[in-house]
Length: 180
Image 1: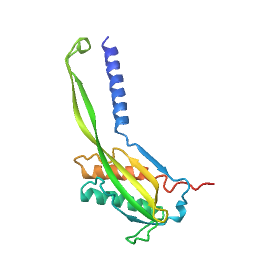
Image 2 (image 1 turned 90 degrees about the horizontal axis):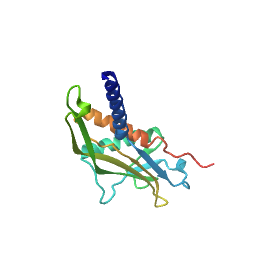
Image 3 (image 1 turned 135 degrees about the horizontal axis):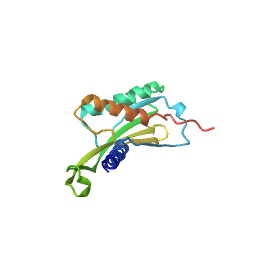
Image 4 (image 1 turned 180 degrees about the vertical axis):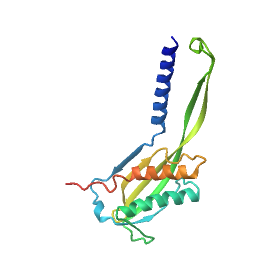
């Protein structure tokens, strides 16, 4: 009977681990104007969105640097000139989720009424939103979001790695493929 309980507990632990990995994964979504010829948009300028939420200056700079490096690889040039083809803006949103932590106590017979507890805590999940605006057309041409991007840990390198990964996923399909 002990082996069956052990197998059951291991199976339960594997299911919970798989669930935790799914919950922590970054979710990336994007949309774009299908009538825009992105091949003609070669320069960009950073702009701020009035009333938007921004993190501290250090984090804001890290976000911009991560995006700048990927846009440069895609052939775009950053400028401070108002004649840029694109205005690029980012903002962050913070939502709250409840995280449940369950533990079980007891010896050999815990499956038959041993002690256990469940606690909850509130965690903040950071979402990065990125928008591109065609200056000549005066319209938004691309929008993307990456959730669980700004979820600070005690390790600054881990935070930077998470940010780099999210931005790479977010801009993976930018510029969108041209219509045929």
